[in-house]
Length: 243
Image (cartoon, rainbow, N blue to C red; front, side, top):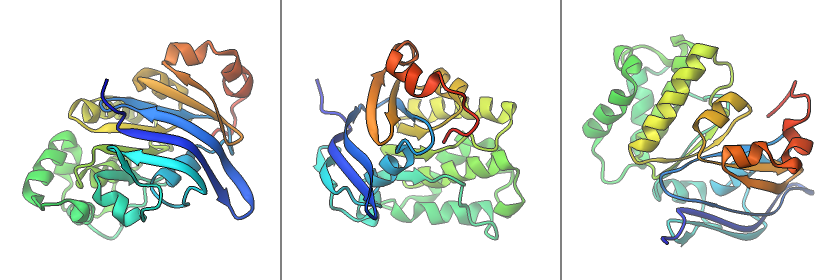
């Protein structure tokens, strides 16, 4: 069996004096959509940010494509074909769609902007129609598409997405599910933090569940749904404010 694309072993991370991650162990295999779920403060976004180098892991090891990236800077990690679309989209609202995509291409080596642009706009035909439009004038769903498309311009092997369905309506969420599967099928492995359980259960191959900074369960959607630890820690709770 080949080595996992991403391997996290014994990782702890802190915000100041607060331990946010407590000995996390998990693997992500190439060609998967992996979801991180859990209640508010569980450590999901922190884990994703730690993989990307900010905050740095205090203990443990993170390996990507069989290379130790634990102590690398975020810039160095991005050069290794790992990209992130953070929570809140964070597009450049005064720049056009094209200019936003140009910003995403800066980590791609060697540079083939025209080819990358054609590939990404084929995945996002709505953005192709709005390529000269300012990002801030797009709808919420279109801005989320732009954030993901910008990350894909670097040709990542692993794409980290934080709450991509936040603020989307049912139609846009359904479109997002189709898009995530298309991205994965085209060769990009995905790790997603998401509280929309319908989306997670519909697209994820593997789900990891965090609770208070610890990994408490992992497996297929069916396995996770039936795990009593998950039901107690997350799925069985009222979910007014998941994160």
